Image 1: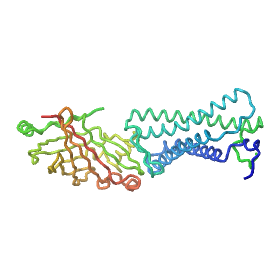
Image 2 (image 1 turned 60 degrees about the horizontal axis):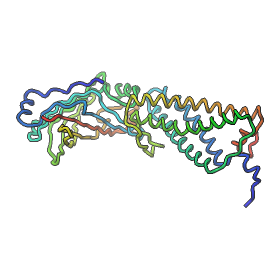
Image 3 (image 1 turned 180 degrees about the vertical axis):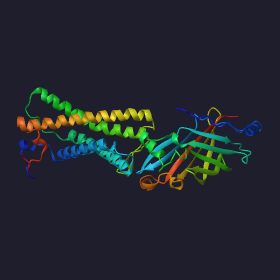
Image 4 (image 1 turned 120 degrees about the vertical axis):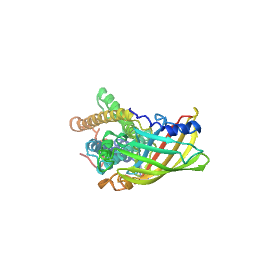
Length: 186
Length: 186
């Protein structure tokens, strides 16, 4: 077994953490775009299919986020780059909120679907239990909750991405590189 | 929410009721006509908000017993306003032409042990087919009689969902209709 340089070992996130991060990023963009597009479709088989895909993506994000939290709990993350205190605090708050939303948003969608009386069947194979009985006024409230949380997430994702690019191109530090494979060195 | 009062049993039936326990008006607020369909493999719950029932139930004289229903199809309660609008269109219920579904019992059989079988004709969208509804009769805490039953309706038999919606892979042919009728003690 080859010994690793301890300094080098902790400059990047591990392969699993990176894979989970970028897969989640991809699914968030796909799920968000699909969600915005599907609501305006005329009632059709395509619309029902898109709703189903949107729900599958959401449940997948929820599962991946639970896995990430467990992984992060058991695997140390690289130390923070030197930066002003307010930026450190902002980064911690943003990350906590992102994790919280990635757990809560799929649940709000599942609750919303249950309240409309439509069961969620993950990947078309695994029927999930209805969390609420069919209740139209409740469904209208949950629709608003699901939308608000998603626009909050979209705003946070933009801040998160913009901050990463700012650190990379203006501060020229390693914030973004930590989440990119070692071999890829932009 | 508006509900129509149940039909008052005809005078003859009321006299019959006076002589032998059994004929009653339905307690419409405690009663319901629900259904469950499957859409892309997911259960979708719904119900009808407005219907009328004319039920005469005399266990000792099943020959005179009957159960007739008029269901206002436009009063359907589904997942969203959009799906409610859709299901009223010509490809589905075509409520402009066929606003009411009608069930008229022809025979009621005693199967023993509080179980009965109500056979009759169900007319939806101008199409009449035989339907058999097994019923279980119970008493609730306040002495009301509660009749519960369910049967599977083949939606394509009644042309509910034509054209692009005829594919049972999108919306299953089987729709489980659940009926719960609460009748006051005589």
